[in-house]
Length: 136
Length: 76
Image (cartoon, rainbow over the protein chains, first blue to last red):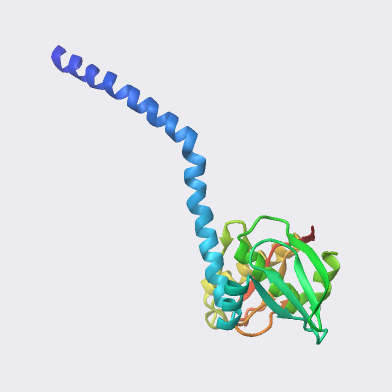
């Protein structure tokens, strides 16, 4: 019986450093390890949703030219150029740049969702969109 | 619903709700509540169909094929 206890205590003493190291590793790396997949997953889902909401032509334009053109629903010669990644939205009228808009969500969201937000606001709520944006 | 974790999806079945299905009715109530809460925080809801311009809505539309709710926007 005593041999068994001695053997068990040897095993426990060998395992203890490993347990401590495992605990330290978990405490130090738990946040990045957890967050990176979540963020990547959010980005992936946002990309799928954006692709679903755009026509093939719009999505190709966004990928190749780096911006999405959204015509104004109220001003016939006005077009909004939404950047693929964060940045100012350029506004052209009759092909000429007339202003740049700085506007974004209060909470951080994936880049693809930001593109979609601009598009939705321009198409469905242009007046509030322009009222909210800082215009340069 | 667009959030920092990516889009959160809620579904409802208007036909089943119309037929009196308690689960479907509850799902519609829940969707209404979620949209109302988002709007109270400055969020905006749009009725969308792929390939068509988005349409802003002030109230939940259970007949809508898809509704996207975005968080409040601010000038930068």
